[in-house]
Length: 247
Ligand SMILES: C[S@@+](CC[C@H](N)C(=O)[O-])C[C@H]1O[C@@H](n2cnc3c(N)ncnc32)[C@H](O)[C@@H]1O
Picture (cartoon, rainbow, N blue to C red):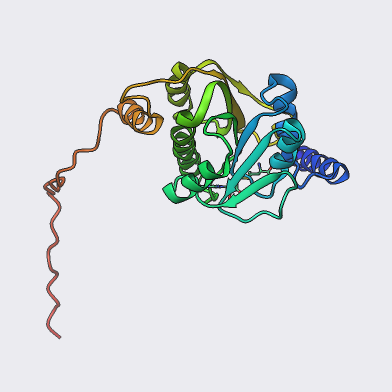
C-alpha cells in the first residue's frame, strides 16, 4: 500500500516536472537521464525514435542533435508535430513503414536509435513481457543494418524470461551492452533500458536477432513442441449409464 503510494507520488512528480519544462511526457526525463549517463547523442546526429508517441523523446532528441541533426520518429499512433522532427505513423515491423522511415532520413546511415517501444498491455504479465521482447528483437533487426559503425542503440525492455538470452545475442553487435535504470523509471519496477554502444556491423547470413532469440527461448524450454498431433492418453475412466428405475 505504502509502496504504491510512493510510486504514484514519484510518477506525479515527474509528470509535473515534464509539464513545467514543456515536455509532453514524463518519459522525456528517462531519455535525458540515459543521455546524461551514457552520452549517446551528439550535435548533428541522425536519430531514429521508435515508439515515439506522444513525442517526449523526440523533443529531447531534437534538443540534442541541434539544427544540423535529424530526428525521425515512428509510432502506431499519430503525434502532435514536434518542431525539428519528422514523426511518422506506422508499425515498425511493417516493411511499408520501414521504407517510409528510411526515405525520411537524408542519408542512409543512422547515428543513434532510441526505442521506448512497448506493446499494448493486456495485463497478463508473462504475455506482455514476452511480446515486448519479440518487438524489441524486431527493432534490432530493422535497425542494425542501418546503424552506422560506432553508432549507439538504446531500448526499453521489461525484466523477465528471455532478457539474458537477448543480451547474449546483442552483445556481439556492440562493444558495450549495459542495463540502465534511469531515476525517472525507478517507479515502474520491471522497466530497464538496454544501452548498446559502439556498433560493430556484422556481415553474413546469421546476424538477425529475432530468429536466434526464438531459437534460444525454445532451447531454454527444452526443445520445440512436436508438430504432430498429440495422441490422446488412454483413460481408464468410463461412464456407465444409470438405469432409470421403472416408475
Ligand atoms: C511508452 S510509449 C513511448 C513514449 C515516448 N518515448 C515519449 O517519450 O513520448 C510506447 C509507444 O510504443 C508504440 N508502439 C508499440 N508497438 C509499436 C509498433 N509495432 N510500431 C511502432 N510503435 C509501436 C506505442 O504506440 C506507444 O506509443
